Image (cartoon, rainbow, N blue to C red):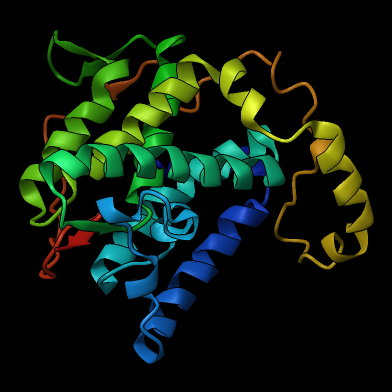
Length: 271
């Protein structure tokens, strides 16, 4: 499989602030649900189409420990890179808007196909990032070579392979939730300039960060907060491969553990 460790060192830079923060906050919410049933108030169903709180927050909750761990492992690498390329606040708004767009599609289609099935979990964010990076990566590495053979596979479609694979091997995985997250990622990847119009202007973020500078300086030195003022050239920066050249896929995969929890998610859901 792809060497996921390449996501983590990020050219020797420390891990990104929001990415690390989420890795702490997601387990906190999971444990909090053991005391207070917040999952019931945050999961998303087609009936929640006008509930902005559910539309924004459903990726934050998880229905099992296995679900949580897998999503954290899948999310941290690509989110860490995205934050370093786009800025910490920009990434936070990106996550919120992508959850909102995916959630709206889930609710609209769900009215017709799965009216009583709810969804939860950060795997929708994972697929959004997979879709985004597959678009960008395809511009520099159009195809993955299958190691040991003369065959290759279009980089752009790799997330679809993952989507089908996960839907087949993990009972209760939300095909629709993952699909809509992936479609949002493709949209942002192809139309990033259009998507950026939904983001708050950089000058507003810069002013807010200036007022919060004392708090930002309290962030530990081993964590990197990417300020908006340092990201003003992101729209004109040429994409650099996150994998390098000579991409190849092995002919084998590692074993995967499946969750015994019922339901479906952006990862798992409830009916």
